[in-house]
Structure formats: C-alpha cells, structure tokens
Image 1 (tube, rainbow, N blue to C red):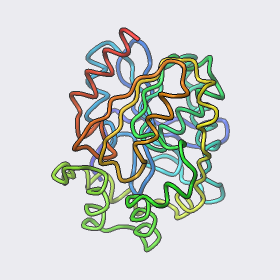
Image 2: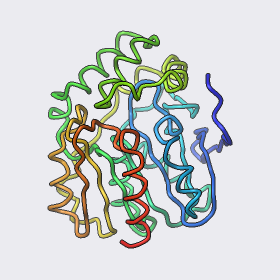
Image 3: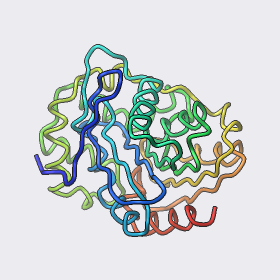
Image 4: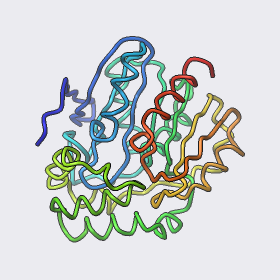
Length: 272
C-alpha cells in the first residue's frame, strides 16, 4: 500500500478509529470523501488539500468508517446518520466548533445532513456531485452506481477491475493512475460487503431550505453516479447558493478540473 503522508488516528467515544490528515493552520476545511470500493480521504483529495494549506487554511481529511484505514465494523448499518454521527464525534474530539465542509458524492450528502443537524457548526458548504438529492431508485438507474454495486458484490476488485470501475468516475480515463490504483486496491480488499449493501441515504431535497450558510457546488455534465439535475434543486431551495457546471467532466470535479476547483473554492471562502 502506498504510504500516506502525515497520517494520524483518533478513537471516537463510540469506539471508531478514524484515520485522517491534519495539515496547516487557519480556518478549518473538512474534506469528506465519497463512497465506493477502496475509497479514502487521501485518494480523493490529495491534489486539493495541500493547496489550501498553502493559502492559509487548516485541512482535515478523514477516512469515513468503513473506508480507507478507519474502522470497518461489520455489525452496523452504513446509513447517513451513522456517518454524520461519526463525523460529529471526530470533530468534537478535535475541538473543531466551526468549519467549512467540503463533500463529494456520499460526502456531499453527509455535509448537507451535518449542516441540517448542526447548523451552528458549519460556516459554509462546498459540494461536488452530492448525493442525498434523489430517491434511491433514481441513483440505481445510473450506470456508475449499477457498475459499482455489481462489481463489489462479486468480490474484492483486482487491479484491472478497479481501473475499469474508476474510469467511469471520470471523463478522461488517463486520470486513473497507477498511484491511485496502488492506494485503492489494497483498501478494497479490507472492506466488508455491508459498507455498500446496507447504505441508505434519504432524499434531503425538501429540507434544503433550512440551510442558511453559503453553498458552493460543482457538477460534471458527464457524471454517471449522481444526476446533474440535483444542482438545480440546491439552487432552487437553498437560501444562498451558486453552482459551477463543468462539461467534459464526470463525478470527480476536484480531480478532473483541479485548478478550477481550487481557485473557485478559494474565491468563495474569501468572499462569500
């Protein structure tokens, strides 16, 4: 497994070991990764969080329970409230009372629910192709979700299987590097099947009007996991929201258009 720099580990009050990066000083940004075989905070955001450190921000990049090098309990259901509770325990243990949440896919749904449950702790939201905006049946019609569920159900993915699956996440498959495969394939072998089989994310659309903090969103027009129509739900219902819709881009805006993502986020953080 490729070494992850500056890694730390924290045990939450409920007994979960959370593996994370904690870099920089200043306002705290919490990067919340998405779902999928072999997913981790570092593999999702390694091209982003160091840039924000250089521009005066503290970044926390945890592995969600069930993912990365964090605990992978087999006796829990991986529902949205489980992740929100784990994230809250993690941030409270680090005495983070207010922060910006940066969430991709499942991480976007977690960020939305966290802002609904703990609005006084969230100063801003940055979302990339967030989940939690459609009914479960809609997501299961998406090519990427179908492929992810079927491949993982068949057993831990080998290197070429992982390459094929991750290629659906992006418009340009050359972005699926050997380094990324080195990071994700070993983690995939450790993940219990329940991580995906018990996952339930409710449709939060009707509650978006309760979110009062500024929201910045990104969506790739070629996203095969979360339909881009979700962007209009956020724009319609949230009180203070803007979205960047990017063509020739899949589910990983922060990877495929890293410079655009980083610069746009910095402007939002400084001026929203």
